[in-house]
Length: 153
Image 1 (spheres, rainbow, N blue to C red):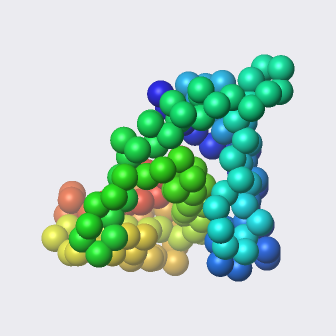
Image 2 (image 1 turned 120 degrees about the vertical axis):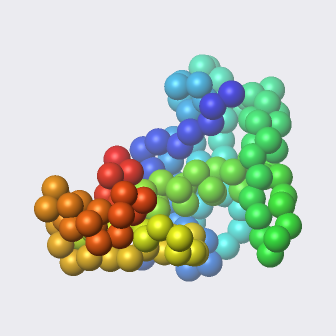
């Protein structure tokens, strides 16, 4: 089972304790419901429905089981997701990709081989990425330099 969020709209101005958003939920390429959060803390609202618009308890149970196969780590401990936290992770991943795309339009993001980075941490060059920048980075840091602009879609 492949759970995805699409049509994600994030409302930064409304986000207080959690990310304010609304999104469509897809399973194996078919829309099955919607998710939203008002940004004031608390759980996401997740609605999964049948073709005739009724609550689909069987599918949501299957989705919960799928979500449990995905994990997250906090302070060295690993935990299984529930459907709420997994949808939140998918929205967070979408938001991170969106922000990376924005940054990569005008800057070059990269990681130097053999350096340790926290999640979401990169070196930044205030030049738009191109072959000249790639040549400079590989000549300076070697072929092992990881250029994030090449990974962002």
